[in-house]
Image 1 (tube, rainbow, N blue to C red):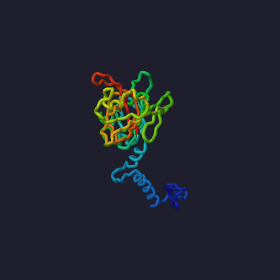
Image 2 (cartoon, helix red, strand yellow):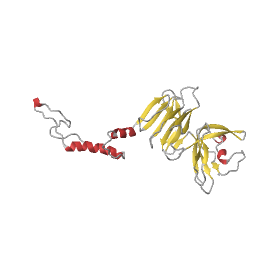
Image 3 (tube, rainbow, N blue to C red):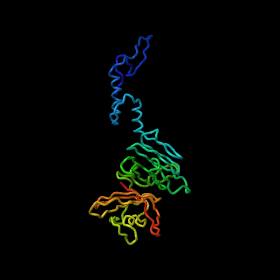
Image 4 (tube, one colour):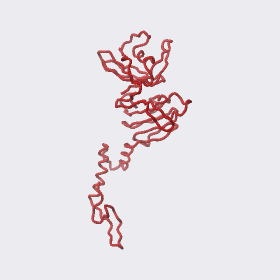
Length: 281
């Protein structure tokens, strides 16, 4: 980028001239126009956008992609007017979030304001297809990866935090793989053996290692798959409401989970308390 440099420019700026003072208006040259055009085209090229002679909002599209939209909501959240990243400040109430652009980031910060607030709020994403429970005292950070799998339209991480009416303090820590909570320790690896044979607790192995007695809320633990061959998907409770989804385990590998709460479910007339787990990375 460079200012206008013709002989009739004044300190690198344009003037209308002043005929009474014998000052001519600024002459325009191809260099300046080409400079401006190249600057704008470089913006589109840097964002991987092809120039379109019929689209007069391409620079605005770039600015929306680079920007972060932040607003306070008390009901459903529409993002149709903004294509970039979103920070959603919300009351402690369930709400629906419409579809976001692929590779965008959303941060949901519920306003946990009083002891009477619910233990969780549920965010329904994309036409009631996917539901995410945000436990009290947590925020949700999600990456939008549409089309990866039925449960990966929004890849969530739950971050414990404390709010004193003025400051928002992260209780856990962030790393490249997801959430590392303060209670990161292990009492020996939990083992998934991929067997239909119930254990001493009368549960299938995949349920057994999710028993709440093996976890603490906020704790991160690794689960080991002992199979020599590739294991199938394993069902995991991922919300305190008892929602579950399939998580892939490679042969003789670990998957790491963070406990976000508990869920009680009755199986064969016996009540079991399970840990609600989110894949950590």
